[in-house]
Length: 239
Image (cartoon, rainbow, N blue to C red; front, side):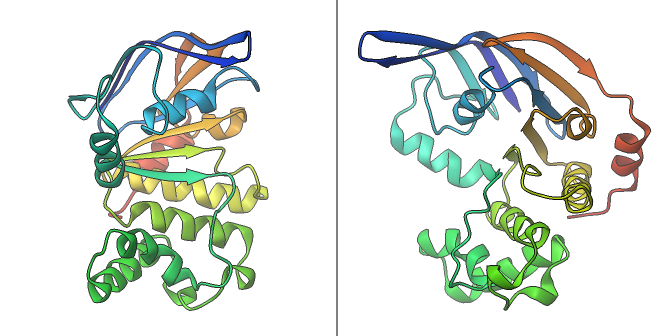
């Protein structure tokens, strides 16, 4: 599903050049849950932005679902983001004056989808994350874990093949974070591909595989043999 080959990224500020990625190569199979782990400044978020077609590498090759986006124009990248990718961030990025249902519906309304169909799809997405009963509530009326579930439902609304998550449990308590990770495992069990960036070893160990990033390079990989990960994957229902 994802092929990254010798990706590099350099930021230039005035006369100062900072090489953030230094030849990153890895692959992610369809239906795999991969955690990218590393210290602050290791290049995790920069790499995730490239995988999400929000940024371009300065060198190397990036293939998403069989399509090489290394030289793709902005229109092709934007279309792929809308069709193939869902994003979940540490900050929930919900509109405070819009209900949970409205927040989930917004990507479809921006794409000028039929409002009735958009509402039905948003209701199904909220049901998939266990929040159908909170659809009419404002973000201020929801807990942090519930707000993150709304954000996940919004990421699911276009039925993406790949979900990219950047520290999605970083603002949550342990119980809420565990609930979010269980939702992710169900999504993977239903066939979606998930790439999650974290600095937290306990979070990373809920994935199938850990990619270790250090100073802009892949420092190693670890297969996760955690019984919890396997059990959640085997018990996953359809989402």
